Amino acid sequence: MSPPSPTEFDIIFAGGGATACVVAGRLAACDPSLKILILEAGEHTLDKPAHVQLYQYPFHMAPTTTTLTFNFGNPSPHLNGRALVVPSGHSVGGASTINFGAYTRAPVSDYDDWAVEGWESKNLIPLMKKFETYQVQPGCPTHGYTGPVKVSPGGHKLAISEEFICVGMTYHKRPYSEDTNDLKTCNTYSPWAKYIDSTTGRRSDAAHCYVYNQAQNPNLQIWVGKRVTRIIFEDKRAVGVEFTNDPVSCPGADQSLSTVKASKLVVVSAGAFGSPAILERSGIGAEAVLKRCDIKPLVNLPGVGENYTDHDAVLVPYLAADEAITMDPLWRGEESATKDALAQWTANGTSLIASNGVDAKIKWRPDAEELKAMGPAFHQRWNGFFRDHPDKCVAIFSLIAGYLGPLVGTLPPRNYMMAAYFTLYPASAGSVHIKVDENGKEALDFTTGFLEDPSDIVPINFAYKKMREIYRRLPSYRGELAVGHPKFPEGSAAACGEASGPVDLNAPDIIYTAEDDEAIESYHRDCVQTTWHSLGTCAMKPRAEQGVVDARLNVYGVTNLKVADMSIVPKNVGTNTYSTALLIGEKAAMIIAEELGLDYNV
Image (cartoon, rainbow, N blue to C red; front, side, top):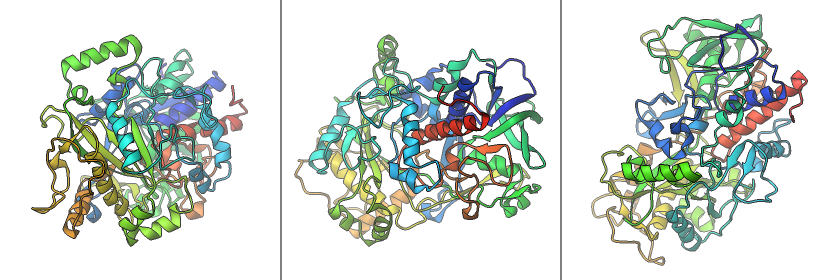
């Protein structure tokens, strides 16, 4: 797939993440004679166990990782002075090769809210169906059954997740639904499917599903370890890109600059961090940003790098019963457990190797009693955004069967579980720009925006209390891992610790004092984290509204240049964002195919 390097292609992709793989793969299938180049800063992922075995996703967070980039935010008073760190993918296929693999879809109202011609839900649902093979159950009208991306329950059904569903339905008084990814259903407890092929037990990532399966096509090339620095223009027409060796993928390699030409189109697809940076280095962005970096302006486009949004996540650890089955032995690297699981996975694609430890969820909307408990600080946000959109959930609650967190390797070797909750439509927003540091080198100027709007922390604080009550009632509950919980005042009824077993289903809830509430809020400002769902920094909006691209993904003010990745999302989406990245890829492929006179439905 990477023969001796030519100097000109028809289409060049600046970045090789999930969306780039979809677009490039579809276009190559439409017309195998198209000369397509993907320039990716990271490494190949083809058939590597670290990428195709879903259980390995936590290992990519190691400080020495080369498969993702740690993007360091500016310290924020809303995070108790903390500088949030947000990872992004750094490999062929991007985050689709290293993420949790959780299959979620946004409600149709999210896409209609974008108010972008051609991107209405009625036009996007056929594309959602086109990219998937839904192996969970047959005959679902909103799902697809012939696409390249496989969706299944995974290789092992965890009983501890069944406990979460049962307690949720009884104590939390919510119904059960087999499918909350039908684009409308929420507020029900349900199984949580995964991007795993049930026939092989392998992760279903964009690289393997769209480009590696076309290795026989010499015109579809992937150059790895290549970091795009800027777009090359003749007047205001994009004609190629400039790139260098990536210092992480190619340590010690020559850092000189190279160029490659594109005769038809350049597509920037480097994600919510990389795409605005490439545009700004190319002279496209806000005048003030370009001036401070001593970059000659080409187009004054102040929306570049603005509108950054994410989802706010918290993972809270609990102790689980000795007899419970969790991911902990595999995540600790216990030799016998890993060997047995690998043998089963190799034989038939099952076992915890084909699991992420997350088998159940609820897309949660508060009921009247819960809204009252949350207090007036959330009421304006609820009334103005959520109340009249019953398909939009406030947060996702789920159970992780095992421990993921900073104490990995230091905790006693027992079973754990984590309460995971993340809000889907935070009102806060941030920005991503380039700057010059004190050493004269390019650096990231990243304002995360997390918890800046006072309404954002309210459902998170409520979620801690609700999830703790659910966990206290799980048969596998053995207490809290206190070091990972709020520091409640001495003598508090909310004090954390080990337990011999669950409380009765009808036991009274914990009563929290004002001091306890302060401890919970401080805890969340200390530990709220990204959900890896960065988006919005090259928004598909009108130019006058800080837009960067139009409805056909063209960058304003230039020609032959598009952006196609999660950075174009104009408003947040209530989902794990891989599904939206795939959707954008399919839509971008359709747009480009139309412009080239190709049959996208080939």
